[in-house]
Image (cartoon, rainbow, N blue to C red; front, side):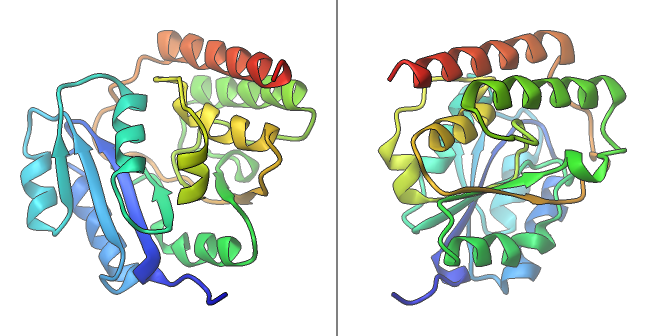
Length: 227
């Protein structure tokens, strides 16, 4: 079987009022992939985010705000390419690492997850960083193997994985997208990545959002153990 190239790759994201960063993110994808990867944004913005994205050549799917998971799941299912990479639109993720994610897929991985925490993630607010370490500890206990970063926004998936699993979570979708494949025997790998300071303001409340994510991890972990 021939190896996947950037012509086989789609980069997808949910966007919500990210006009401060979306242009930089899309320029980075264009530069790193020589313009060969497709880009899909599922957008619920009230600012210029969708206009900027279209100007940069992205496909924009507009929908009413329904939460992180609804947007990202729709973005994941939109492309017709065999490899899909998620990222956030706030310029925190190192898109120059896209070749490494694609190389891991070509090496046989089904899911490649960017681990922000092992390198310190010093640009992440301390409360969020502690919460993410706690999420990883809970997930590790539930799935019976070491999980380092459950909520990273940068992952690569074979499209067959996305299509083969029913996804149920919203705010906690990022954790679910890692845990269900892990529990079902897919080849899931974590690779260490740097994490930059975000451009623009966050829209997620760390307390309520953290509680929802923890609930998702517990719910998904128990469902998978009972399958």
